[in-house]
Length: 456
Image (spheres, rainbow, N blue to C red):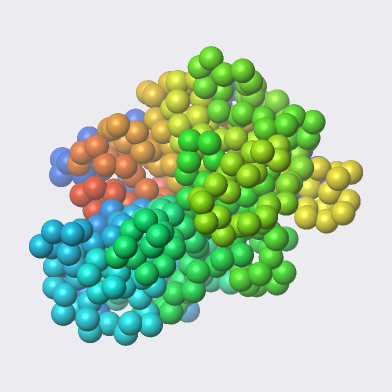
């Protein structure tokens, strides 16, 4: 049976009553005496790094840790973490060079200007970007730590590529026409090879569109890229690269449900449309034009052509049978939705019209005690998926199994900050997650289920 047929069968048979899945989760959470993160019995965490720590390049760990991925190296005990920092432009006050510069303009001036995407005319640089951490999972120590992308803004989530790089997404469409201290328009994706030993030269991936980017997921079998957008009336985008090993050229499209123009999937109170949980829809993809969107209205263009509307698309992940994405504020209670898309066996090809991809609203709990504004998503050992919450707090990492049963795995005990960037080491033995505020990265180990099935 083809992957498409298997995925479609899963769409029809995935949901069962919660009582039919008695083995979901890892048990109750044990309070953390240190007040950082509660975990199930048998699990422990190590603090990998903290905001403000000095790195090997002489710069400082920026704040607002967000999306992240873990990459293999030649040493099975060493992984490379590439981590986003969701900070924007340096402030206009006396501390104009905070973030990686810790208020020291000399550190900024010492950098190669060609490695900074937007220097802010030397007055208010964009200070978002990524850091790269070489972490030894055996010794549980950081071996190397440096800034790897800078001059970008509000790098929220992103996604890994099959060729070993991280795509960092700008969740900000600031423009020099409106902000005089900026040098470039923002709202782009940037590629950061995991094995870089310093700053990458930043090249915006313009063909992937300019909008409020959130996350990407690449189907490794086809090279097709799926993108989310963090806006209250967002779209789901598909990027068809000309070269599946490069994201600089290709076609950008928006998702639509066949026969239902501009289907509103948000299920908001008093909405004129609704999308039932568990119902499967045939899809189609709409070509987009003017993708540089100088008026920041790409989502409106897509909706006018019939594309589906989503409530703040955030995390995205490609599993074995489907593409998953998160709508952070969708649903009647505005507490989040989880969607699943099974690509066509002819995704992006002519025969796709005959064998369309299938879209399903998989989960909409409408209960903050079960799921509170989910954000990033990743696969966990044994086939479950992990979600990080970004609600008013306290926030958790929440898992759900193939039956749709939700369970808590971790709880942020340090305050109301969101949990972000969940990912596993390539061997599935170490789970990494960020606590955005106060700015921590944790490495978690314990008795994982079915380790052999793990995917980062």
